[in-house]
Amino acid sequence: NQEILLKAYPVGTPTVDTFSIREAATPALPAGGVVLKLLWLSVDPYMRGRMSDAKSYAAPFKPGEPVYSGGVAEVIESDNPKLPVGALVMGMMNWARVQAHSGADLTVLDPAQGWGTKLSPSLALGALGMPGFTAWVGLNIHGRPKEGETIVVSAATGAVGSMVCQLAKRKGLRVVGVAGGAEKCAYAVETLGCDACVDHLDPDLKKNLAAACPNGVDIYFENVAGATLAAVMPLMNFFSRIPLCGMISQYNAMTGGGEGPDRSAALWRAILVNRIAVRGFIVFDHAEKQGEFLKEVAPLVASGEIKTRETVSEGLEKAPEAFLSLLKGTNFGKAIVKVA
Ligand code: NDP
Image 1 (tube, rainbow, N blue to C red):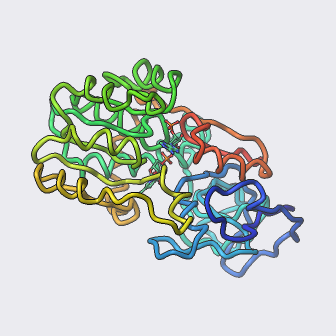
Image 2 (image 1 turned 180 degrees about the vertical axis):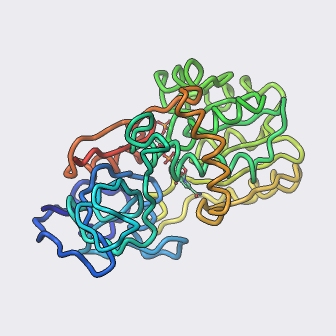
């Protein structure tokens, strides 16, 4: 057995040396719990926030202890009749090949619903899991989309963004993606159905985004902040909305301590003058809507009407690199680790 630990809280950009791998004992079956064999792991940007003890909505990882994230596993020993041996389960799991688990908050992926046949279990960590639900919540509840409006989606080809683009297109919006590089932009238009996609690595980002949004912007689905936010703000319409989902371009910088130039006055002014509703949201505050999301979106994913794309890294030992790829933009679609 093996497990991956966080060595210490990184300042600035984490590297593979932020993590270490060690041999671990085979765990004993806990009373009322299960022993899991990890099959799939999710790596997600919010995990950067856990590598710091700054106040947040999620508890920090503990240095010297295993890293954990969303996973899919097979139950290999059980003292819980609701989680029988052989069941496929999804929930928060340690980065360990085999692990004891209390069983709390594990969801069984029922084969009768297509899991393991029509639906790859990895989708429970992406399009039909936390990222897909985040897209649905941010767009529908906080974006309040209306047919004919223009939405800009940053990190448009990623796990969350790719779902926002496709769901918004189905609601009749003009969808403008922002992504890093020509290949991702082509995918956003050709596969995700965006009306346009602008490359944020292009020095003409501001001009290109303005050209792609001739009627201004009614919804900005914010995943990245930084240069993309600066390019979108001048285009925001009166009474527009910003579901503030993430700000990945700043996650490493925020641990550096130093302060950059203060642009808050211009930002506040744009929010005031345009009466923009900016709403920070965290997906787990909306758990009561999960059933509605799955009822609507699972059939569209199973039929292929909604497209999904994954970057799969093979092997538990690849999990740190897979996580780091999110902060560099080298993942294309949902970043997943296939453990077994
Ligand atoms: P993605 O699959 O979108 O992967 C991250 C992507 O972010 C990269 O591929 C890259 O895309 C982009 N990126 C990375 N660094 C930068 C940078 N410096 N500038 C601009 N873009 C950058 O990740 P997710 O879909 O899982 O997450 C997207 C966002 O949603 C994150 O901010 C995350 O924290 C947030 N989130 C929030 C939740 C909530 O409840 N509020 C829940 C889940 C996610 P590209 O190559 O196109 O630049």
